[in-house]
Amino acid sequence: MPGPAEKATEQDRRDLIVAVARELAEAEGWAGVTTRRLAERAEIDVGDLYRHFADLEALLAAVAVCAFADLAADLAEAHAEAVEGPEGAWPAVATAYLDFAYTNPEVYDAMLALTPDLALGVDGVPAAPRAVFAELRAALTPLAEGRDPDVLAEMGWSLLHGVVMLTRGGRLRPDAQEERETMIAERLLRWPRPVGGKSLGTSDDLP
Image 1 (cartoon, rainbow, N blue to C red):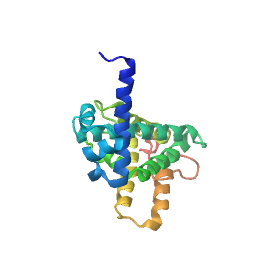
Image 2 (image 1 turned 60 degrees about the vertical axis):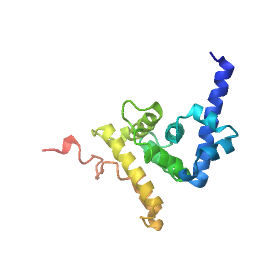
Image 3 (image 1 turned 180 degrees about the vertical axis):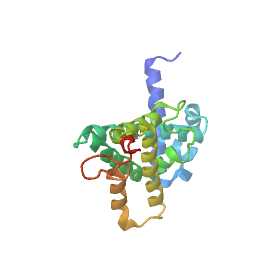
Image 4 (image 1 turned 90 degrees about the horizontal axis):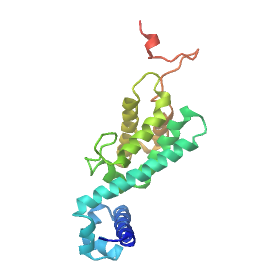
């Protein structure tokens, strides 16, 4: 049975493989991530690579889980640093989400296009994807005003993901990108507030 030092070495080697895969994917796309290229860049044997990951699909899932953890940390930091009180958390978190997605496009694809089993907010998946959903939910809960926070978080995530993918695909007008993102962060998910401060759409407005 391996001792603590050997276990640490094995974990270090696994972490190295994941980091190299992320770097290679961002540089050349996932088509460029082959066992031979990975082994060369990580300076390990191909057999050692397979000892840690059964196949490239397993490695892709590991990259996605690691990236979900990084994204969750970014969202938590943005939430903690929001300066406009609880209702200012969502704009900060939305901006952090978009920054991550645009900065890491290939890794973002691994998280949300190439690993369908890693569904945000669903029981049975690793903690990191669920942590991202939890951060989105926490940022939007102050805006819920009687609405289901889980549904609101799903809507917020859908808006962010949709604008990321459509923007990356060149389907939206580049000159309106800032306005779109500001609308998602600051207006779309808030109840309208008429003069007098009462929110529209709550149970108080029903006959």
